Image (cartoon, rainbow, N blue to C red; front, side, top):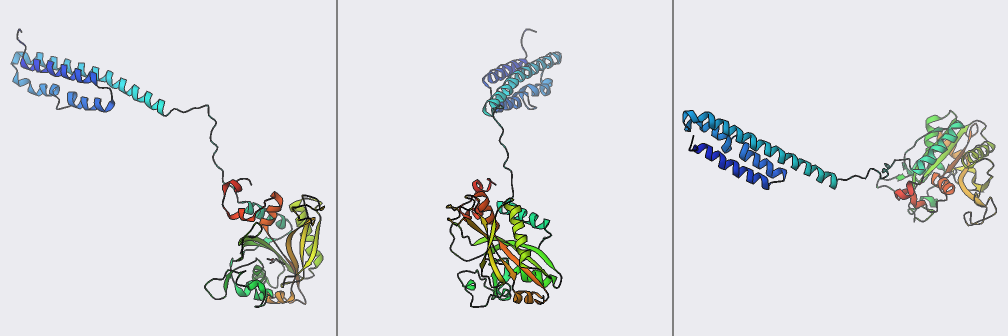
Length: 347
Ligand code: PHE
């Protein structure tokens, strides 16, 4: 064959063009486009097979063979180029996403109980060992339970608009202490004996400062039965303090007034900083006040459904935030609800 057939010439031109283009490509996107153009179904090389009838009979086999050669030559060159591009892309990612495996790991942040819940659980545990059950009562209370039935008459200053959060509903307030739970527990259990702790949030509408917050927790203690005496109150509270603050911690009870107890008192623990000598933490008294307490007032017993001639009882109210503050020397009660992780994660 002296004169090249036109189809073969066409193939040679296409091959030269394809190879020249391929040589200038290096990115994967460009290569993919090239592949469709020169090796795809409608590419000139593939179309040659369909056009074989254009050639003379004796040339067809030769052209077909040559087309196959061109095809596999282009495929081979393409594969080499594509592999190089893949390697380059991989090297790029490895470089840009480089990880230093020798760096120390980042520890996940663990959740934990709020410091008040930790203290509350310890309080429950100690009282549970002494036979007390947890009794829950609502934070939204009636004026009657919060004041009236606790022997706090309407003119008492605790009812002042400045001290209490009122709701729009007449006679419905946010409880100012956990003591209304006393009446609820008594009305539920009378005339059975009672030994419960009543925990939960209390609210007072007042100016906040380092030792005052308008929301705080209390744990109320209530024991009702026959022959309950002030000695039982004292013994129980002393035992609690020993278990909470450590053996040998001294306590004292001072007379105090709460309308729902008679007699009433406040309990102090010896200052743990100066052991009673006097220091700034205890304001040079040597003692730190931790709770209010007393014998349940006959009027309250009666309101709860118990005959004060037959039954007696004692009650106390302590503040878990106060306990935590004394234990961990926290100097501002507002930290408890400020939701600052830097504070919370210390406990
Ligand atoms: N409820 C009182 C207060 O909030 C505390 C208290 C409870 C006092 C029980 C005596 C008996 O201050």
